[in-house]
Every structure is written in structure tokens, then in C-alpha cells.
Image 1 (cartoon, rainbow, N blue to C red):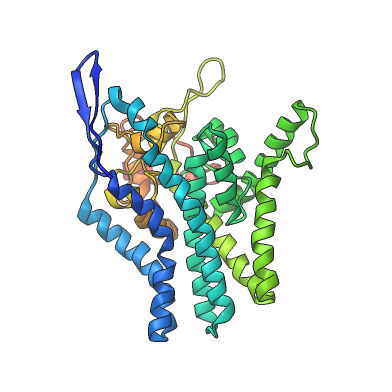
Image 2: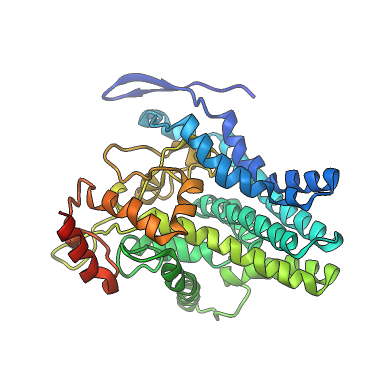
Length: 395
């Protein structure tokens, strides 16, 4: 498929043109969810179950190394050509194409776990690998769920059914985006809060808020919350069919497999939420309302490799400032909060709280719009005094 040249007249820069050098590489976001089949193939050919863990090695070792090798991409498409770039169907087709592949990967992993004599650690490992991959499905649902076409809305519900996370689109779009980078948002991590304490707020908080928002929407339409019109229940009905069929085919062991798979997939979203807004805070104006979300209210990452795997999710700053902008048009801005690595490098750091705090707290305090001012940081209330004492002493 040829790589088109987009051109337009810009009122400031005159005639501008743009060719997306990464156009073909965006297909990595489509094929990457199939990586578990490489582990299954290795197990089949060698007989060694250790091969089933290959996707974890590719992701959490290969990912950071490739990010470091390929570096960061700070290039932006000219704004004058963005409407053409966003209208290009190729980029949408990629997000459509990956949806059935997430179903295929879960089913393939489940069939392998249900038909092979695996040692316990390998059974758990394969379920974990499947869960990590379905966490990527939540990212696909994120990209699709922000778009306004009926097809993309339904595809979002379908792909979110794979990891049993059907409430995400409602919670994320109508809850998280409204309250992001404020103490009121359970999906925005606070300075001094470990990812494990954060998860205790974020996981149940998201489900509760999504149900409340959807029940309120249906109430205004004169419809009951428990009905076919409920968007959460529509997605969860697909989950029931999919995962129920797997349990019916493979019995009780599949209950354990899917429980591990689902929790790990949810944990991937929790990990992303944790790193994306850690400690960042929107200010309240004289009217008591929070300022609108700006690019510096999210941690950004321009790392080329992992952005190619995640439909450029890591350009999160522009996403929150312009939620409907499609992934291929998301921008880099100077002087943004920048993560030192892509998500595959930052997630393992977050899992070791003392290391995360060592890496990120100083980076947070040094941001140009903060400069050590704790009134501009979303701080864990239980840790505020200790953090003030620590960094006052350090200063």
C-alpha cells in the first residue's frame, strides 16, 4: 500500500506537506497481540513449557531495550494536514482489524491450557501472558471508545468484553476524563501512593463510578439501569458468552485460567493509569472549578517502539487535552512531564515502590510548572507531612 503525501496551505507556514514515515509500522499494534502464539509454537516444537513465557521476555526486556535503541520521536504532523491524516481510513482499519485478534489470542491460549498437560507454573504463566495481551485489548477499546462512530463504539464494547472490563469506556470517557489530575479521580495516582494502594482505589472506584454514570444516563432517558440499553451490560453479555463457552468446553480449570487472565488484564490498565498522571494536579480557579485539562497534566512518552505497539497511547498529554484526536495525529509538546522510558519499562519500576519514588518524585518536583511547590501536586494525604519533611530537608 502506497504511502500518501498529505499537503495543505497553512496561514502561517504557507504550503506544507507531510508523509507518515511510520505508516506501515503502525501495523505492529495489530500483530503484537499475536505474540503468545510464538510461545505456544515454541512449546509445541520443543516440548519445553518455558517457551510459554517468551512474550513476557519480549515485552518487559525487549520493549525497554528497543525503546532505548530506537529512541524518541518528537515529530508532529503539520496541523494543516491533520484533518486529512485523521480522515485516512487505513489507520482506522488497523484498530478494527485487531479486535478479532484479541478474541483469537484468548481462545488460542485457553485451548492450549485446556488441552495440554502443563505444570502449575506454566499454566499460571500462560494465563498471565494471555492477561497481559488482553490488557492491550483495553488499550484498543480506549482508542475506539473515544471515537463517535457507531461502529467504533460497538467495536470498543466487543474488545473490552475479552478481559471482562466492559465498564471501562463509560468510566474512562465520562468519569476519568472529567476528573483527571484531581484528588476526586480514583484513576489519577497521588505522589507518595504506591501502585498497590492506588489499585485499592482505582479498581473498585472505576466499576462503581461507571455504574452510577450509566444508571444516571438511563434514568434521564426513562429507562431502567438493568436493561438491554445499559452499555456496561451489553459488553458483559459478550464476556459471559465468550468466557462461559470456554468454561463449558474445558471445565473447572478454565475458571482459574480466566480468573488469572482477567485480573492480570485489569492490572495492566491499573499500571497505565498509575504512571500516566502520577502526582499531577489541575488547579482550581476563583469559581471553585478545576482548570481545563492541559498537556502538562499527563506524563508523556515519545518512545518510538512502544508507541508503535500501543496506538501511540504514550502521547498521553495530547490525548487528554484533545480526547477525540486519533492516534496517528497525537502531538509532542515541549516542556511536558516526560517519562524516562516507555510503558514496558515503567511498569516494572512501578511494581517496586521505593524504586518508583526514587525515579519519579524528584522528576515530579522539578517540573517547570511545579518547581517544588507542593500546592501544585496531587499528594497522598497520608504521606503529605512525611514528603514535605523529606524534600524540605533535601532542599
